[in-house]
Length: 322
Image 1 (cartoon, rainbow, N blue to C red):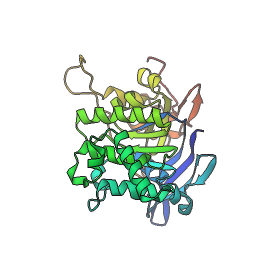
Image 2 (image 1 turned 30 degrees about the vertical axis):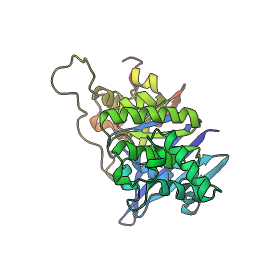
Image 3 (image 1 turned 90 degrees about the horizontal axis):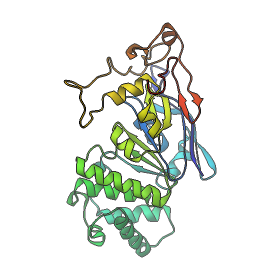
Image 4 (image 1 turned 180 degrees about the vertical axis):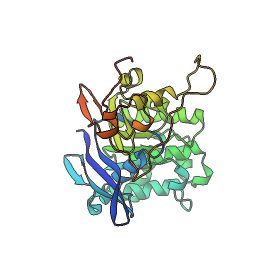
């Protein structure tokens, strides 16, 4: 059964008014599939992740949205409904595993505690399962590593432990927020390979939040491009990487360095910057930076419309291959 997010709205309370940060974000992820959520810093990607696991606190608040999984829908603005999901229904892989692990306890004890919080296991059963999980995520000598503290493990090992924690209760959804960013290139490749294997073996739905289009190309089934708190394009990964339709998507792809590329000098850059909260321009939020913008773009926001197997919010989309 697919995981579905419908109509997520997140706002910042400022001077008695709600400033929109994330607006009407919706998606569906089938079991064993990965949705890559991509955009510049400030687009709202990590805020979307925080909303799904109930880690939004004042002055930021969730003002709407439903998350459907395992046959029931939860109102995300109701903290009492969201809190029980964390860990059991929604696993989370953070960007920095070192700050997410408790430095005062061995990693094995942290796995045991999480397992017993969500599953009917005694300590011996939880220990046995924790060691299997550590082996499953490729940690060498798992019984020995079970006793190690976070500072005794490398960055890649810590990330594997955090992935094991996210999978403890076999949740239908795992949210991975920039989970390869803090790792060196060779370790990134190992973690990407590990995630691909675990998605296939466990059949989980994964929301992969990243700015790295290389990781998206390796892992994702579909890609959603986010700009200024809204999704502006969503498509199967192969189609989007080959023939982006939104000018913002193409600009992101053109800024990616390529091995063997012939372009001399600096990589193309998107002019300007992401609009600040509360300072969204009228019409399409991307129009001040878009070379295709018209008067229509400056006055009316394009809706996100379904086009075949994709979605697009643009008045002047690029032609296929254009």
